[in-house]
Amino acid sequence: MRIVVMVSGSGTNLQSILDAVAAGQLEVEVAAVGADKPCVGIERAERAGIETFLVEPADFETRAEWNRHLEKTVASFSPDFVIFAGFMRIVDADFVQQFENRIINTHPALLPSFPGAHGVRDALDHGVKITGLTVHFVDSGVDTGSILAQAAVPVLPEDTEETLHERIKVEERKLLVQTISELAAESSPRLPKEKPQHR
Image (tube, rainbow, N blue to C red):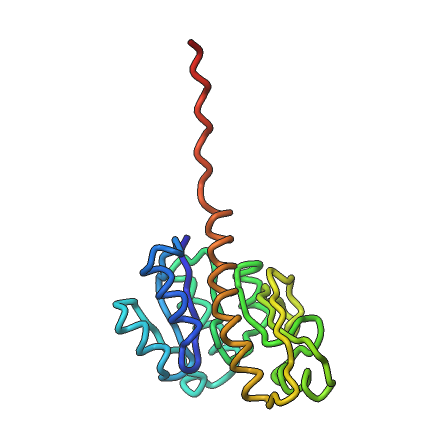
């Protein structure tokens, strides 16, 4: 199974994928890593010998032009799935349609609760005792795609947005790798069962 991973920041989710591949725990080919700006995530990919690309919005006159160029670049690697691993840009409906049911994202809350950019803060403000994270398909809405997996994380009395988010990220890295692994297992060709030997 071929994946393209998109990043925007430190690339810790990407690193968990690369580590799992290197350890033989994840049977996928990381075809490329892309970003919307120079970032540590791209540096991680380069150190691992993986092809990288940048598609920066500032280089395009319109958001639509950026989306089309990003879409074309990602498609050129023929990925089975596109992983948004801390990719902080919202892509348009045409991009989503091009890779329908093949774009995977993580969100730091138990969707459908607390969608949007401040899932951790919103959960804290609401006073929940348990929050968590969701791995889901991307659709044309905001965090409304089909849910693939979730993990719960307790909210501690002393938690701040930062401490809670850090604990969520630890579980996020594990669950993202696990989910990709399950998708890879589902997409691998099934070997025909051997016929029983008659004696």
